[in-house]
Image 1 (cartoon, rainbow, N blue to C red):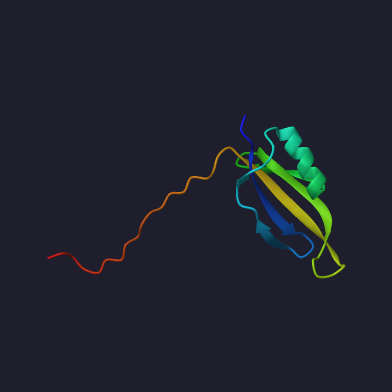
Image 2: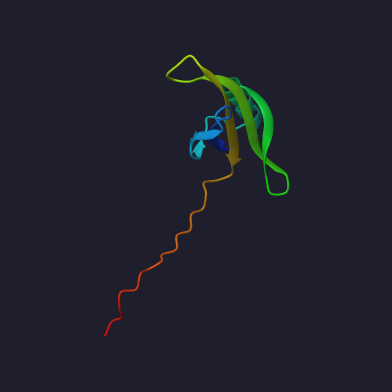
Length: 103
């Protein structure tokens, strides 16, 4: 089995805003259990699963207290981790501006 593709999204729950995302990348794990334990060790306790559609679980939400980089103050950080089967499919549709017709 190939290593698992994941995306991490970080949220400052205390401030009520998103802090960014990792984009989708291949992690170092090919086993979901090992990946979960590593994520929990790094991002804190698992508070919930991430669901899409009709209640299909596709990842986890981890929570921990984190210090701001520029002070000793702390906030509650959520890390939403979703697992992916492959890189996203991107469809591009051109929308041309017509400037005239050939004679």
